[in-house]
Amino acid sequence: MIKAINIHKSFDGTEVLKGITFDFRKSKTNLIIGRSGAGKTVLLKTLVGLITPDNGEVWYDDIDFYKLSLKEIRKLRKKVGMLFQGNALFDSMTIEENVRFPLDMFTDMSFEEKQEQVNSCLNRVELEGVNDKYPAEISGGMQKRVGIARAIVMNPDYLFCDEPNSGLDPKTALIIDELIQSITKENNMTTIINTHDMNSVMEIGENILLLDNGEVAWTGSKDEIMHTDNKYIENFIFASPFLKKLKNQALDNYK
Amino acid sequence: MWLIKVFSKPEKTRMYYNEVLRQIEEIGFGSLKIVFIISVFIGAVTAIQLSYQFGGTLIPSYYIGYTLREMIIVDLAPTITSLVLAGKIGSSIAAEIGGMRQKEIIDAMEIMGLNTPAFLVLPKIVGAVFSVPLLIILAAGLSIFSGFVTATALAGFTPADFIKGLTSFYDAYTVWVMIIKAFVFSFIIVTISAYHGYFVKRGSIELGKAGTDAIVYSSILILVADYVIAQVMMG
Image 1 (cartoon, each protein chain N blue to C red):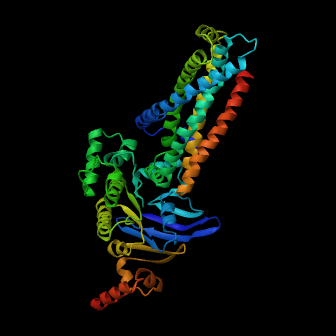
Image 2: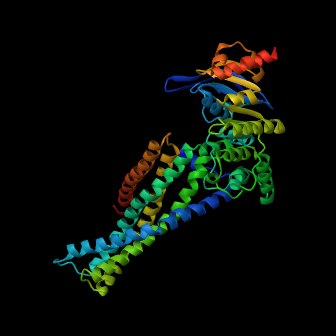
């Protein structure tokens, strides 16, 4: 579990996060959603320690993250995996070397053991026969999978995903969503996903934090979204007439 | 503070070792061609200018070898080579690290728990501090040879005079000055360029600016360091 308590962050006098408090639950896909500029990425980077908050606390289970020394943070980060919006793969390394990199850096495993772990992760994300290719030689969806494989290769307890579906077609996006959700369950991880993809929200949103202008606008699950009368949700999630119609149809069927 | 992180203990020595070898290949072998070209011209231009200035004077003709050797070893080889390398290596380092910053690769490494200033910069410093002095020694040798060919073939000096001058008043101390300059200049090129790349902001314009700043500030600092070393060691 990861807890954000009263997180504040400003840039050049503009307050981007205004006292965010939220519990990101273990073994759940926790989603941070909101419009562009709502503070999603800043919150995600604050949780993972890439941006230091002006105020507030972040707890990884019973560890107060911002009370840790740099050495302790680096130790904790061995338990953290992250999938970046642009994948952040090393261009000069093959897919296999990319996934193996954390093992090379931080473990004393033999080459064979590392290879086995790499192949197991690549198989888990359903990537085969690409070990010797370079990131530029595979599609965007495959790069996302490599990013996931690299993020889980150290068997992390916490997984962060920044816009995992950006730039993907709806079908591939759905596959990536399902992959992240199933890996979360299998490994009993705390997964936090920053997204503005409404398909993701409705597919894997088990614990949702909706941000608006740096504040918590709504919290709940995908099932609660359908039944809430929160006007902000109504306007944000079901923004288009088509989605509104779908929602009404779904509610009629439900009744 | 950033420089302290650069010199902190490596997580996995073998990974750093591999990276150092890659840097030696890139910086050292990758710069051989340009060092060869500039060295030929440094020697040739120096020989022609000295022959022009010595012409019609009472200065013994063998002095051309001596003067050319001193100029090249003490200043021209280390300084001009380093200024050119600041352009070649500096921009490449700033672009490489800056690109990694902009593509969030540095953030990804941080999340893995890596000391990114050390992993990205230390191997480059070690690679440069190993390669650049060798390149500068090579540049000095080639420049002197080019000066010899130019002075004897085009400027009317005899090989015997040139070689007599080349071997006169030799003091190994000047070679040490050259080597110390080479170490300091290579350190400046890598740290300044890496710094500008590491702290680059978003956008392609910023990346270009980082490359330019890397070259400009490295070059200025090389000239300042050149003066300081000259003052301390020869003043």
